[in-house]
Image (cartoon, rainbow, N blue to C red):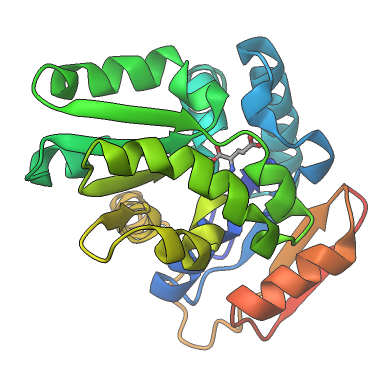
Amino acid sequence: MSNNNAPIGFFDSGLGGLSIFKSINELLPNENTIYIADSKNAPYGEKGKDKIIELSIKNTEFLLDKGVKLIVVACNTATTNAIEYLRQNYNIPFIGIEPATKVAATNTQTGNIGVLATKGTLSSEKFLKTSAPYRKKINFYERDGEGLVEMIEQNKIEDSAGLLQKYLSPMLENNIDHLVLGCTHYPFLIPEIKKILPEHIKILEPGQAVARHTKNVLAQLHLLNASENANPKHIFYTNSKTEILEQFIKTHLSLNNYCIEGNY
Ligand code: DGL
């Protein structure tokens, strides 16, 4: 049975989900966590739906064995392709991540928005269905970010400038005023993206909204860790280089009590 001290589980095809982890940890600092970086299988976005479901099952079962109370699918590609399967087959709450097209489409002044996401997300039934109502009035300029996830996984963020220029130029030419980052890896590219986009273009990433939603779901289920001296533990599993994961944790998160296991 789940209990309030049980950890929140996260999985992603690697380091991208740490952008979501960061927002959740800032809002819910008492919570214990377990994070899976399935980097060996990155990028999920170039795989077919069946394979993405298979990998999501493996990650989910690993987290369930560790006794998590809720799972954050910290990956747009796994959410858009696999979350329905997971919800139907496992009796645990799942939080998913989807591109923030609604916010962009509701707030655009130019009627043009950009979406940078993986091929797996852009071609998914779920994304096409949820974005369909807005496409009647708003122009979507979409681009899959082929090659970007690999650069982030190798911590070579500064090498992304050329690809970003290529992917974002057509959006700029079409007068977008919002850029939706539809992959949890991409927030790590924001410093590079800001060098290309003029300041008035809003860059949307979902971390804070997902964190608020996670808090609400845990509260409704009476699963928040309310203990005042929680001294939470954070365990990270990877099946790739522990050094790069550690660099990311040190650079982007402020955690005291964490350990990295290289045996996922
Ligand atoms: N971080 C993931 C996402 O949000 C997956 C990227 C990938 O593995 O292709 O889509």
